[in-house]
Amino acid sequence: MWDSDIETADPPLGKCPTCDVTIPAANLVVAYDRDGDWPRMLAECPDCSDAVNPV
Ligand SMILES: [Zn+2]
Image 1 (cartoon, helix red, strand yellow):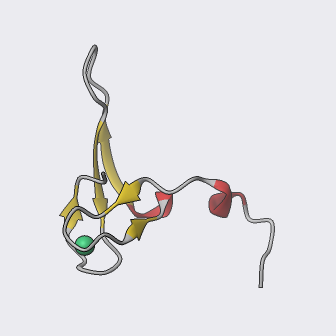
Image 2 (spheres, rainbow, N blue to C red):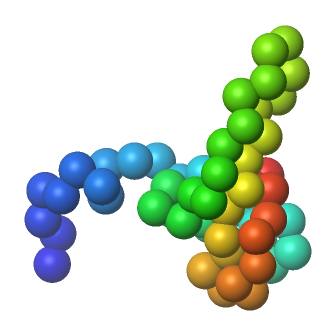
């Protein structure tokens, strides 16, 4: 079932801080780019369906 869709080539964003589930890049909701600071991201957790900051 593996195809060469480029969307699947993105590395995961991180894990949900609540349920420790890996969040795929496709679940990214919004990314803030802040100078000299951590990039902040909001992504929808596939498990709790909440918008979280991947860790
Ligand atoms: Zn979660």
